[in-house]
Image (tube, rainbow, N blue to C red; front, side, top):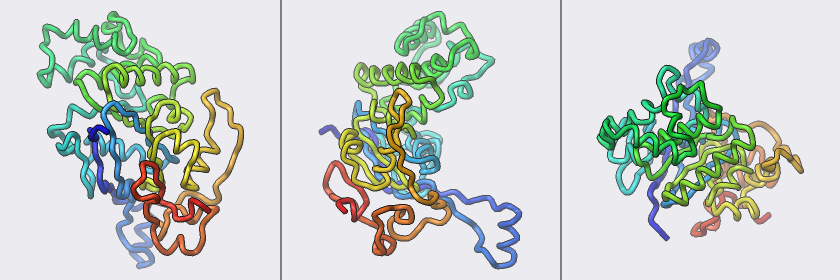
Length: 327
């Protein structure tokens, strides 16, 4: 097996919650301690191999997007370490700052509406000395071809493209600096189903043709099952299950993953069954003791609240943090 291109170990990101008027009153009267801390990402381990697509899934608020920003160096972890080919991924630059790029969900918001797309695509490679300005037209034409657009698109403005075409432009801009890994944060969530399929096929083609590794963040498990080689399931900022995609979807070991899989939509929008988890996800400000999932888990016993579970099986490619996965 190839060595990972990207490795994350013990990655943690915390944010200080800004107190509102009620919070300030409770702190002033001694009814509440000052300084609530939101644990958005809490001790994540993750490997991404060359030309591998890793799906990162979970409910809204589980830390998926925060983890994505950490992986590309848009933010720095408070604890832990992220490396790309052994070089640290740092916020604000570093040896890996071009090798890892990001594609965001809102394609329109990430393009400058006042500039032609050709000038936006070539800006970064010219600034970093990867392309000579005299070669810019040919470079942009080839870049557009790689993402399924015509060369004449370079002279148009972002508003002249459809949503799917704008997302192709954002993928092209990520490819412009020759990355080896791109992080897609809900990159197809706002697109129609037929356009989603086109973008997914484009990403698969880039993986197969150019050896591009992809971290694919999504709440849509049907889409992740379609595209991912491996899957990491996040709950309250922690990975609770990971393994090959078919193993995770067909033989889920964690009760949380099992609930997600049961409730997934098919790619044509059908939902065959519905299973509702009891309660609401706990607040990342107040993490429950023991197993994070025990307040909502149908298999929970008193021991689940006493101690955090270990990975089981500990040395397997497919593991889950649940001591009652065989119950």
